Length: 321
Image 1 (cartoon, one colour):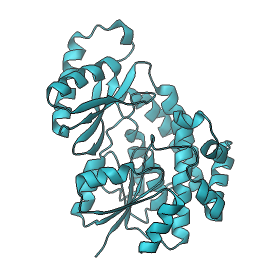
Image 2 (cartoon, rainbow, N blue to C red):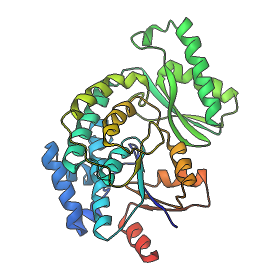
Image 3 (cartoon, rainbow, N blue to C red):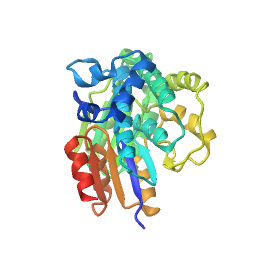
Image 4 (cartoon, helix red, strand yellow):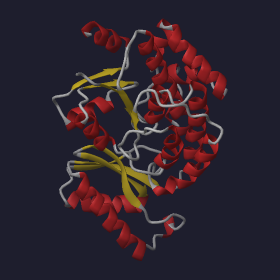
């Protein structure tokens, strides 16, 4: 029996104009944008649709992406679209939590608005992230651990003296793409060693900080406070958490996993492998871009994949149903 997975992308896929076709065509989408604006006090439609620099700043990017992804979700649901399990990459996990029925729109918007601010504020000067292409994740893990251990023992870089010498895996994107994160000089040193080990490329990412490293633990602590008053409902549709690459079965698990996610590795590859093992054979990415669809195809080219970002995507998908 076919098993459909709904996937939501994370920060980095945003672009000006995302969601506008749906906002204009479907009242369900406009209502989501209106709710997000009311909850946050921001003009989310303006941030998403009109030229501006804020959309690429973490504290605005996250709430804009969540709004667009949930708006598309509501349109799909209005058309009778069903799914068996959901997941998301980093920020996208919040859309998956909403899609699972565990969190209300209003609470998700409140929390993600604060999450973006906390991550922006917590970003220490001197952090960095690199995408490592062409090496297996086990080698990347080993190099990061060795570089960090050596650096902790002898690092005397005054430029980054305010930060612990940290480098670790931020994202397991696919079997040949792993993102590393941490203190800038540690990330650069790990990239040098990884190149020597055979990495095809180590590409510095245009991000504002060392996301998904323990340098963001402070943001996680603040996020925990923001989550205290959020009501978590029973999970109606299973979702898989980034931190564990496993199903979240109990509502009591939701908050601790979201808190830990800020400073932990995103196990996307492991998530997809688990879903394949459990019989998933269709993966639908909902939101800006097609990054996750590309990752899934790198993991198993035989899977049925689709992304719904534009009205053309939407019409094409339902025409094929």
